[in-house]
Length: 409
Image 1 (cartoon, rainbow, N blue to C red):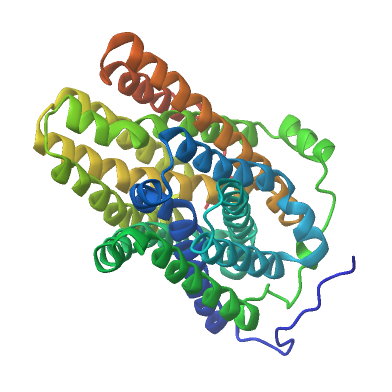
Image 2 (cartoon, rainbow, N blue to C red):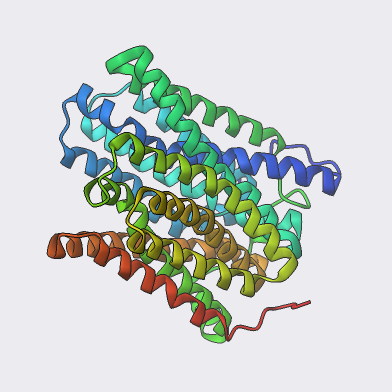
């Protein structure tokens, strides 16, 4: 199989003007492929379950299929980047998410649902991993935090839009509303892929800057030589383990232990989406001015505090403050870690390294959720898992404090 043809214009491009185009496209890619693709399932689950007569076990496997595609392609996406370049890989991945989502609106067979869910996860991560080095290439390493933050904020907007679109279509079309929602959201995702096919390109017009020795041996050698990378990787792993505990169980904690209504608990999701959008942009831009390390340490401490707040202030006000602060800092931490990887890793290896890091991060999430669920069953309270979450996140700054930032100004 040869290299995919480059259908984008190859003439000279105004750098600053095209950076704006890339930022807008990056935002829309995250909004659709991640915000719609990864998280629409949460809003559409009740309708799918009722209409298709599925069990909770069935729907759990659906989520497992998405996660399997996400983790598997986190590891192998760099192979596609090496062959086709970043922009083509991103556009193809977004198109895969869009087509899979549209198809989900037409099928009823559970094995087909699982297969399509797998491709939603695979396309989502395939659009995310190459986007980070592409943004760094257009914005420069010095200003990459703001660029990455603007693009990643699209995921939060996607989560908010998914809730509104799903609610509207479910009310309007009743039992088959979930099918309409998959089709509408998938069509929007496919439109973004088409726009990317015409407008998204790497700086210099090709993907050559991403090519190089990206093999596992080279990555291990890079980790062995660079203590900064080991520190960032450790933080990415621990953050994945810690934050997913709170993110998964906060609504259940609100209903079961704080005794607020389901409607009020649902508002936490809206608060989460809104504040995560603001946090992505804020932390990325601030780190461009003040430096990655000090800003990331501050964000991690606030993230730890947000989890503890839910445990120490067991009232509705404390819970909403906790949720808002958590959302504001958690997506900011992810943005900052991505920017730190970009600061430390040669451009030829960023996509490969970030793919492996994303795999490690995802596996840590799976372990974190499993242990948290076990602790909840063992102790009959979410307080213990939340305290564990805060402790794990709270030790992360200790890994970063000894770091020396490259190119520290």
